[in-house]
Figure (cartoon, rainbow, N blue to C red):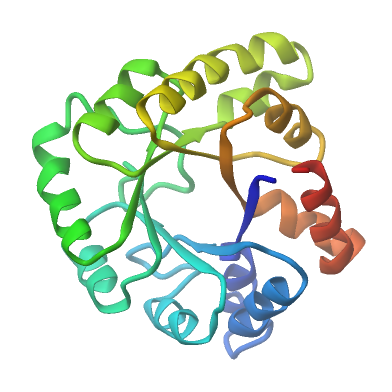
Length: 237
């Protein structure tokens, strides 16, 4: 069964909109764990507009499931990772002002930048995932520089899925096949929801993990978090 890592950024965004600690981000993460989430994902940004550095540190101390910390590998981000040493880091190419992730790494063009960072992360015994577009050449480049995993950016898949499911999934099948051949863990994330998740899972047999936040938290407003997690886990069976 593919693992479900719940991205709790939107819960932190709601908390920050009023100040105080309502909703309690840490308690929500623990609730997700209790209800069957396989991991928790956070994406702290320099302006702390949702997840804060203190949240990441607090989560390290209370979670029994894996903590996945996403972010651009700035010096400040890497200092946080060195302090927390989460199970997994997902490196994304977002600039600080980005609203959300909207593209994957050009690993080939950024090899000299990324290699020393991966060496540091491996020294800290952190699993490294690289956020990439569904391009077999980028998959190969990720393997060459020592990544443990690739996370396929599924924004284009989600945009095309309703009109053309086969066309939407085709490049992802090819990238997934290359990852399997190279021994890379395969992850996926961005704009996944209850409409498109099962089809993705059925067509990528080596999909180890998905990270889902925006749609999952939105669904929880209607369904409640327990029923929402049940449905997402069911879609991944």
